[in-house]
Amino acid sequence: LNLRHCLITFGATTIMTKNFSISSYLACRTISEIRKAKTFSSNYRNLQIKILRALFAQSAVPVFFVYIPYSCAILFPFLKIDDPFELANLCMTVTSFFPAWDAIVVIVLIKDFRDGLFSLV
Image (cartoon, rainbow, N blue to C red; front, side, top):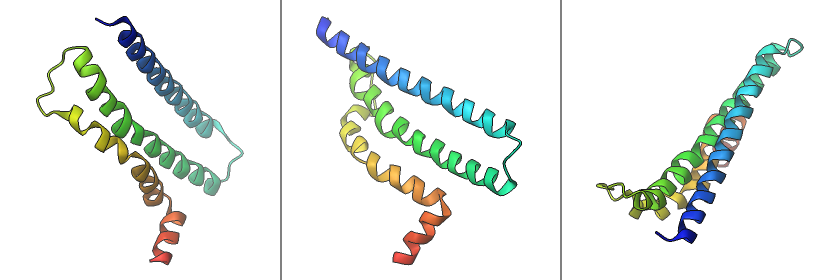
């Protein structure tokens, strides 16, 4: 076992875990505050919920295109976990799709962006 590799893997996993934990906490707090707010009009509240939904979807994209491929490529061999589907080989390909899917999710979920795209086509 190489100590340098262990430290790098531990550091990267710690950073990803902290980012995901902070994001989850802030998402829960945001939902809580929107529900408690009494001064919002129903239209404004609906707009905030739509934006929050798009933000959740946009936040889920890195989980599927960065965190999971990272786990397959780095942690599986490190932890000696079998990879029968050879997901680690697809890691860079899947990760390269991240920027495109990040934009697609927002365009699909926010009507104004979707309408703007269709007006260009």
